[in-house]
Image 1 (tube, rainbow over the protein chains, first blue to last red):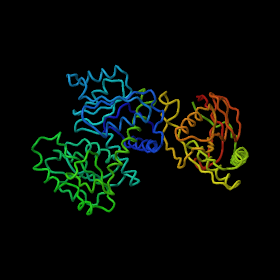
Image 2: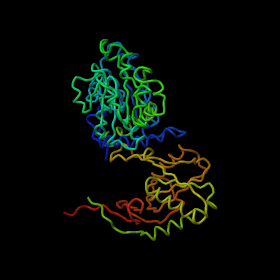
Image 3: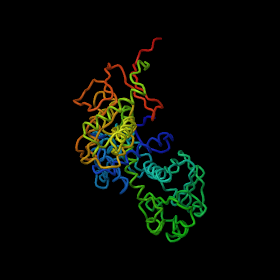
Image 4: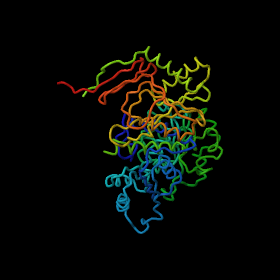
Length: 310
Length: 185
């Protein structure tokens, strides 16, 4: 099939075939990381602007490297040191950047829908790198790639996602992507951190961690999103960690060969024990490596022939 | 606008014989198989490269490793309209430094694919030399590129297409000329 989209804003709008195409393309891109000369000329002369309104280590560096390995010119705009501090609006910032003729703008923003605001107004292709608690499509895609790479398939697998589901764009994108790939999803967390209408997620919902992770093929731990919560949702981090932390003992009781994942950054000792994060079942660093491949694949697909005309 | 088969120019036996002859030419020109590697261009070039490697082993006894190169990311026509090609994986599990690389493709036409392959190879290492083996040379070069080994020279016109079918991919060995015609309705 051929890629037809100009933007990558949500997992929600993607068809399973499109997800498969992204994963297959990313598999081919991954080989470039193992070369001595990590460069291909494909996006030579194209300009990529990373517009990040929130802090990021993984995502931003990953997009920057992905662009550079494809020979694109990459510019990072970090709003904390930009004219946004002087009160410039999102739309004005977008128009200003568009006047410099970028081919792709990658945006991370605390308000849901911000990427769409740019997509409707700019000529560049827009990629959503995380908009509030709404979606984080590239994270979901690299998670699928990592699971598929390790287990050889996606269909029929069971994934348990544990943590602050209600504030997690990783969970929202991830659950949708997994269901489109034919996977079964369970989510677990304290009642205060589960969404108000959990049945709409399409996942099994529980407040008991053991139930969620019992014979799951993959356990994905989420970070407590303190920057998105108010002060009253958890009695204490220690209680959270006791009830919902992924300890060595819990991993022992899980399925043999279970895969452990985490989008990062880790709160060692809170949602995940250090020994588990660094242990043999942990795919946390593979996720990061695959993030570059997925983002290279998206940059290639979005700047391709048909998409550019659309 | 339909594409129809105009003529078959090679059958299975003809393909066999030309690959055998090309294998002998490779050994003759390189004085043996030492330091040779075969790099096929995805995807039918890879099948041909494997067949050549097999024959080289039968004739000379040497093991000539085979790699697969995907040149999609090096093409000069991306983003210029038309459907976007699928990127496949480059798999060359050995070093090409100081090796005699024989690039293998099914059809040589404008030469732009070969140009892309040369760029791709240079990013992967520094071969001692690079030679080009093709099953069919159909003329109409747009770049100063030529093949060292040719299975068959086939003069064609620009409205024609040359389609190579191989057992490994298409279930049958044959080479045909296709032409696009106007629908007569």
